[in-house]
Image (tube, rainbow, N blue to C red; front, side, top):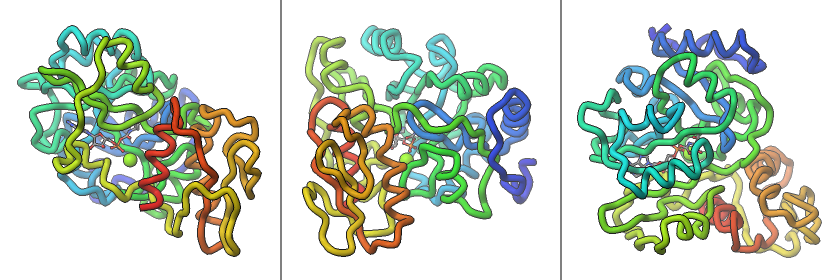
Length: 317
Ligand code: TXA
Ligand code: MG
């Protein structure tokens, strides 16, 4: 199945034990499978298989200088791939399994294809909490490289239908477990010799990490894009996006929040976690609507609202 059209048998399959077993078999054969996590759906392949990893880049249309996150079943397994100092171990202990990715020094001889790290001396690792991803990791015994399961630059998928829509004919097997509970990609933290950096805001907040490590983050120099997934325009719908819109202009699909009603509302109660979980689905809906552009209500820039606003700025860029 690692042949010329490994995605040829794509379909959405309810993530029951038979579908999980099929996914495991396909992954072992070098195929790509879309798997739900608590953040977004990932496009997964065996991280040690160079051909399978190349297939992820090709399928996503992703630039090959943009490294992938490797998913591990637990901290012990992660130690085969990266070097954990005391701070890294503390972060893993507190936030794994969960929506936190750690960028750490690559373990010499780690069984991952070169393309996974795009030649960097570091590797991004995440131990996801979602039971389906956990089952696939444990049953396959593989380390899974998995970017978000959308075409590069498009809106991230939080439902199986989003994955199918993004890839069309080139759709892989998609394990369907409904909506992702967090709904935004994992927080990415790089642990450096002299401190730590927040490379991507996400469900685990800056305040939580600062409190645990007992120090604020080092600044990130934007000029040196070490997390190139953080390219300015990312998560972009096909239509223009206007931010901080209390009211819609003619022709705009208005995504509301709290009392700002809108055509759709991320959270009528003004709950930021609910808004995060619903954000990408709302952008997919807005993109598919008959309006020519999209307007979004102001979102408070606190807690997970920081990650929501980060994604919105990139969607609007
Ligand atoms: O929630 C998530 O993290 C999802 C699910 C599927 O796990 N995955 C995800 O992957 O968002 P992706 O490929 O869309 O984003 C990976 C990010 C990119 O910004 C990439 O540049 C960064 O991780 N990254 C990967 N390896 C890195 C490294 N060694 N140093 C710095 N950044 C790295
Ligand atoms: Mg992505």
